[in-house]
Image (cartoon, rainbow, N blue to C red; front, top):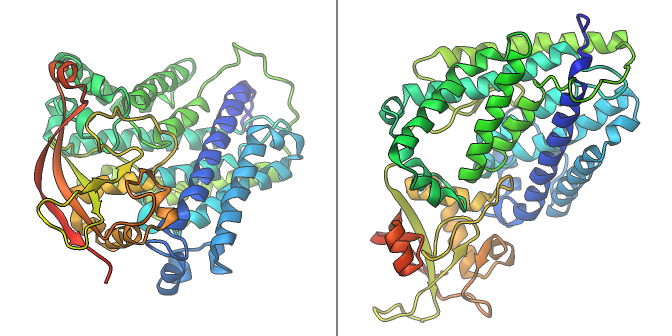
Length: 468
């Protein structure tokens, strides 16, 4: 390895690039399939309305030039096509500069989507995908060995991701310091997976071991990324194992999958396959990589200061291009799970004996006898926002009424986001939303009732509402 190139990381780079391309593909496909109801021209938070009130500097996006639902769909499916080409290895068929431009395309398209996505795209893994995707532009292809500086920047990103998440926990909920947060987390997390019920019922001493292992992985292991091999590879491998544990225990979109992909770039896999002979990097490429490193170092000041602050923020971008961000998750853990159940009736006037039928969501808990499904890395945006709506009605105010209105009109794009609509022929006359407390059943209750959840009525979230 010379001062610029690290041939031993050729295979790790390949795994990283193909994994990132796959996640780009998932992200673009999700945007194409969900945007019309969420941010389309007739969506709950329409892009044209957003662009009319937000200046260009605050949200640079391709859609400043033109917006229509057809154009957005073209950008989303176009991004998916480029991602599929990258997944197939198209960047390896191009000269170095051509490969860099090809990787720049999905980054620019997804940035344009995120910057008009508003609340629906206000998740930390959006910025993480953009920051990772921008660094991938400079990682090169088979025409050059992986640059040491870019590999270092990817480790710096992984460090901030893990260490930031560890610090926010230690500074946040006392249950992390007491090692008791996992008594509740698997039950109250935003979107449980098919194995979350079983994780919740693990013995409590094992939950304490999980919490302690999490602290070690997030607060100690990240520093080992900057040590010599094979220690750095062992640290990255341990992070990958931890992320796989999180993947099977919940649905966190592509957050954990992307962490695995980033960690793969730190693996020295030269022992598995001898790296091919790669030519020396051209001078212009070295200059570009050095310039990138200087820019990232300068932009890292505010995220680093945030890491050291007692008032640490989670999942925040400090620049509109999302180049260097701060991350964190679950600084607090809920002890009780509340869910909003949305129902409709065809009665012209709601009566005490009216029949109310429930809408079912794809991922959000609803019917107590339905085992949650695995959707990650696919991101069900409406389901996630419904979890936040149960935590804070004020958070849902900008879009929840619009959601109800679309149920009352039988909007097809909105209904496609749901698993089941109980009104296939005509929309209901009234829609209401009820508030329930959900908890996992015990083993005995599961055997007796076949239900994974037990729910208790709390109150009315939204009274019966009809179109004016």
